[in-house]
Amino acid sequence: MLKVYADKNGKAVFHCPHCGFVTNFDASAYRDRDSRIRIKCRCGESMTMLVEFREYYRRSVSLAGRCTVHRTREELEIKVRDLSMSGLSFSIESPMVEESTVLQIGDVVTVRFRLDSPPENLIQRMALVRNIRSGTIGAKFARSEYDKELGFYLLH
Image (cartoon, rainbow, N blue to C red; front, side, top):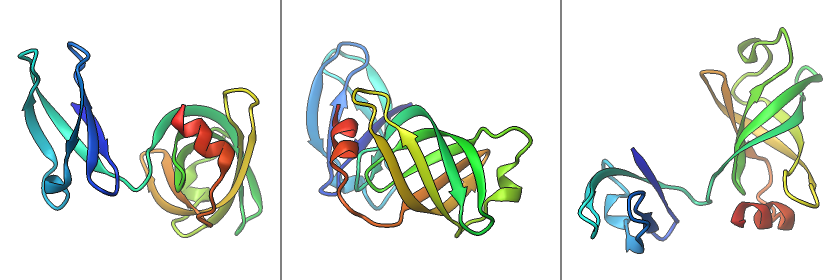
C-alpha cells in the first residue's frame, strides 16, 4: 500500500509510482477517520493510499549506534531503523540480549549514532521509550530542541 505523510497542516504530496506524476493535496479531511483512500491518477492507474499524519517527517534509515539505559546503566549496540526530529525507532543488535528484558516503556535512554552522509555528524540525544513492538523500540527525544545537523539530514 502506498503511504503518504501529511504535515501538521494536513498538506501531503502524492507521487504516482506508475507514471511519476506529483501533486500536492489537502488531506486534512482524513485526519480523524480511516485514512485509507482509493485514488486514481491522471495516468489511469488506481491505488489505495494510506495518509499518515505526523508533526515531523520520518525517514527510514539503517544506522549503527549505541544506547545507554539509564535505569540499568547497560550499554547496548543498536540499529536505528527510522528517524525524525522528534524521535526514532531502533532494534537491539547486542548479542544475547532481548529488548523485553533490558528495556521497559518509560525508560530513559541516551542514544548515539553517526549519520550516514558527510560529514557523518554524531547525534547524541536522551530519549524516552514510548513503545516496544516486535523487536522494534520507539522512543521520543527528551527535549524538542532544533538540531541543525539532524534537520538537514532529514530533508536530503
